[in-house]
Image 1 (cartoon, chains in turn red, yellow, green, orange):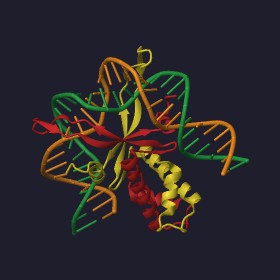
Image 2 (cartoon, helix red, strand yellow):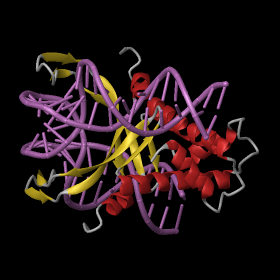
Image 3 (spheres, chains in turn purple, orange, green, red):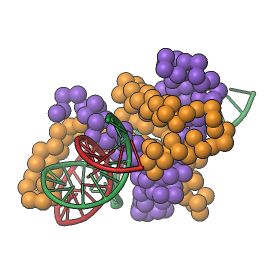
Image 4 (tube, helix red, strand yellow):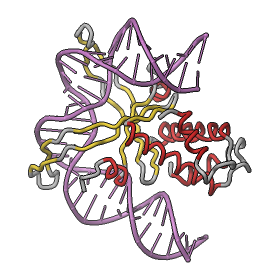
Length: 98
Length: 98
DNA sequence: GCTCGATCAACTCCGCCTTCGTCATCGTCC
DNA sequence: GGACGATGACGAAGGCGGAGTTGATCGAGC
């Protein structure tokens, strides 16, 4: 799903129909993600109920390999973002696993 | 950052001030995440520009260990969600790494 | 139209993941 | 605004799964 489709879907949802323009919807969603990014960078974490949690994580440097030439290369330490789906979401992902 | 704070921040943003109530904002954001979850489950993927991509991933079953008792336990295969920050976001996370 | 993300190769070692109780914090309903 | 119920965070230790590495090309998204 793309940003455009996301906007479409929400705009089409009857509960918001007419209340918010697609343009404003786009701006809103942009802001949502901008805020989330800010939170992750500043606080190191962002959680949304029944969805999941983003966590800022430090990755140690290591020795990797160029998959093309297979020569070894140094990989610098870096910061990444990990996502952990919350319980409900996880269960919805694994239908049979109770 | 929590859902309530997220709503606060966006509601306080001057560009939306007065245009959308906090209550509707809450419903909107709920819908956003619900849609994202739906996309991940149905299509296996969701991307948002300059933010990142969620990918549905299968995890193989394996033998784990109860960290308390250290006894071995079987872990069933399952589906998880991985998140990959896009380039811009990654760079913003690693200020000095050019 | 133009940027930017997806893709794919094979190999390695990092860090995720497990359980479970307690605590606190968040969300929600009144 | 306050109280209650529910739910996520946290940590222990060890093993092996899989993410991540380069780079060019293609297609799609904006």
